[in-house]
Length: 122
Image 1: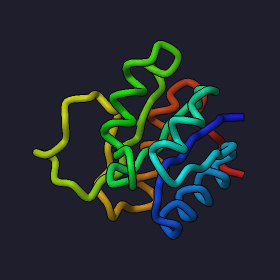
Image 2: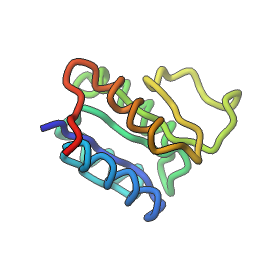
Image 3: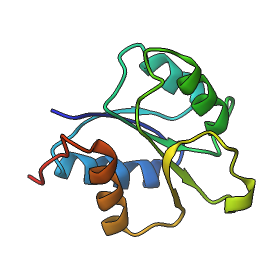
Image 4: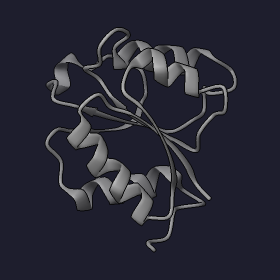
């Protein structure tokens, strides 16, 4: 099964993301802060879905640390943000979706980022 880590502090948005990923057949781990998400990275996921505006360590700092760690440097990351594109640092997230986003676009992006082993809808 495809393992996805979702770091999102908004309960409603996280619930929608988790629901969609589970329908795609993914195993989902959840974190509501950047610190908690970093704690989950001891086991690198197949995909990281990352909010930017998090309490404590923000999403950009999480992404910096993910890219700087050998075990997670190549993990595809889908960044979710309400920030405008010109404010996005050059961190090669893999992909980003502006909030709010359409469920279909989210699903297409997840499948593309997972490349050779996309989940199958169940």
